Length: 219
Picture (cartoon, rainbow, N blue to C red):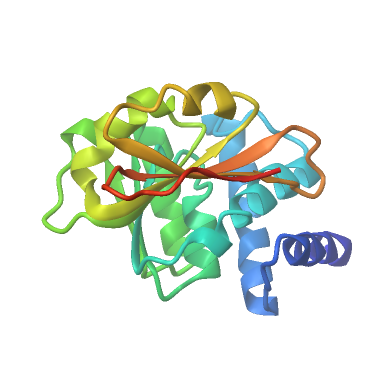
C-alpha cells in the first residue's frame, strides 16, 4: 500500500496537484470500492489495481488545475471519474454527478456515503431530462459522448459564461473540428498522465462571444 500511495502522490505532483495524506487515503479507498463493486457491476474494463490508479485517479486529477467553479456538474459520471476524484480533492466545491445507469448511480451513492462526501449530489437521469434553477459554471465529462452530441445536450445546464471541460483521447482533434456553431474551443491541451501511454487531451469549450481569441493549444 505504501508503494501505491507513493505512486499516487508522485504522479499527482507531476500533474501539478498536491495531495495531503487524508485525501490520498480516501482516493485509495475509492479504488477499494471500485474493485469490490466492479466484480458485480462491471463499472470499468480496467481490472488491474495499478492501472486503475493511473488510468482513473491520475487521469481525473489532471483536470483539477482547470476546475475553478464552486459548483460543477459531471456528465455520465459512471464509476466516479472525474467527478468523485474532484470532490475528494476539493471538498469545498459542490459536485453533482449525473448518470442514466441505475447501477452506476447506486455505486456513486454508496461511495458518497462511505467516503462522507457531503459536497456530492448523485442524480439518476438522462442529461437532456435534467433541469436546474441555477446553471453550472463548469461541466466536466470523460468518455461520455462526442462534443457534437454533448454540447447541445447539456447547454441548458451551463451558465452563460460557463465552460465545458472535456477529457478526450486521440479523437480530440477530429471532434474539436465538429464543435457546433455558437461555441468556441478555448483551449486544447495535451497532458501526460503518469503510467498512461495513450494520448490524453483536455478541452475547454465556451459559448462564442464577440472578441473571443483564437484557440490555445498545449502540445
